[in-house]
Image 1 (cartoon, rainbow over the protein chains, first blue to last red):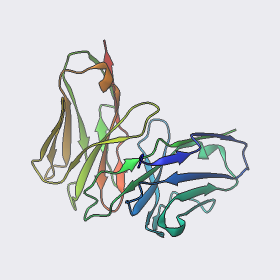
Image 2 (image 1 turned 180 degrees about the vertical axis):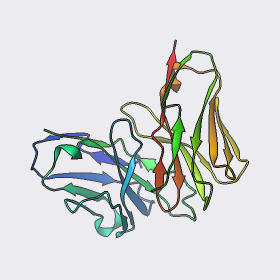
Image 3 (image 1 turned 90 degrees about the horizontal axis):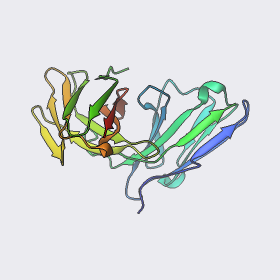
Length: 116
Length: 109
């Protein structure tokens, strides 16, 4: 297992277009998280899955954002009708579930989205 | 929204010098605190998972302490090297991670 993989690494899109990102977590990890990071800020939580179930979705996430994790393996994050404010680094992470999340997360390298 | 703060936002260190910086977090309902190192163009890498008040963890020249009663953690770098240049993030743990904005360390040769 080579860790958490995210594709694409970079995406430039025109405002109003839809984009989809993919995350392949560590295969043994049952939890998968999406975070967004903008310049000067720490990563912000977007959503997370335990196996195939989406258990929590941040209020920061508008209806234009949707995430799936079919079969509890890879996950996709789709942004519809992109806006310039969506420009950010989108990070995926996976972990084993444990009381209090006592294991470190393994992060991917992220997808850098630029909306022009 | 959990308030996790890190200070300073950035610091410059001469090679060979030691440094430290702070993460403050809510002291109630504590489960765990994570520290991550994030180098440019790489993935954030887990450094420490801290769970008990008074915990002190060490990884090479980097160490961290935890005070859950007062809600802070320190990260120390001893004898800084250029490869220590990175952004160091702390994260308060409940069902997700709530990150601070990070401390960006630049080590000058």
